[in-house]
Image (cartoon, rainbow, N blue to C red; front, side, top):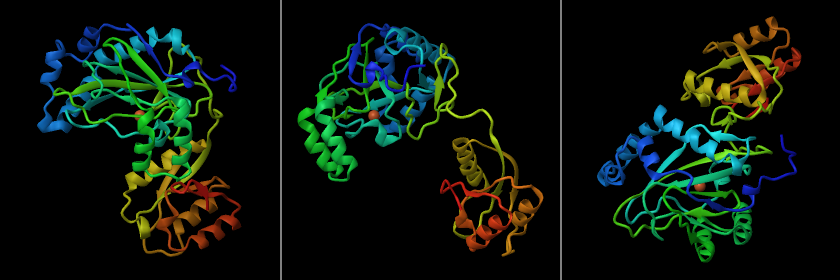
Length: 330
Ligand SMILES: [Fe+2]
């Protein structure tokens, strides 16, 4: 594995990798005959249905094997030590519309170790494409945004002089990273722009809110990379749809607990629901009494009107109790 002090070269620049695939390969992977066939799928009166039907094509074995093949062909620029986004994204920029306002990807949940790969599958022009800043001018603007010194509208105005349209031939791939502001402007093309994009995550694996192993998968060639110790700590979990958490179903609370467990290396081994209309929390009391200090994870302390009482129980049984939603011990 690379040292964490060695940054991947693509984390410091954007580039175009030419002639990586033939556009017909992409059309075949999407099960369309050609460009005209692809445009026929695009119905501007039913935008979300169009996108849904294209996404279905991304989930086919045919498309996913094309995706894996592209990753293999990129090995000379990305190396072998990386995670890749499990599913690529497909985007449509409709005539007269933007496909996205200006941003960097860490603002939408991706980490600073991610590298974007962007592949148009319809011809571009200067309005019907993604626009990128350079990282030098973007730096101060990103800092101002992250310090809360400028609004989104001000960001658009300040960044505009440094934005340039990406010119990428069909069959080539544009790469860029989290230091580059990107987005698009209203398309003046009468036909939609369709592009695919995906990200990879490289050492030191700053992944943002995404998860290695689910949102991002390890490269086939990579050795398994342990980001957490293998041994998980067993824990008891409690779901309770009442109080300020009355609107959160058991399924929702369970999902919150499972995310907390995954992030904090817990293995849920037993789940119960607290009894309703019993202010002394008998089920939690019983868990504490009969489980010899195993930590207890509540979906949210908002469900409990007397969290101080639960805190005192935890103290008296010398057991940790966690609030999964707040991601902390109570
Ligand atoms: Fe983005």
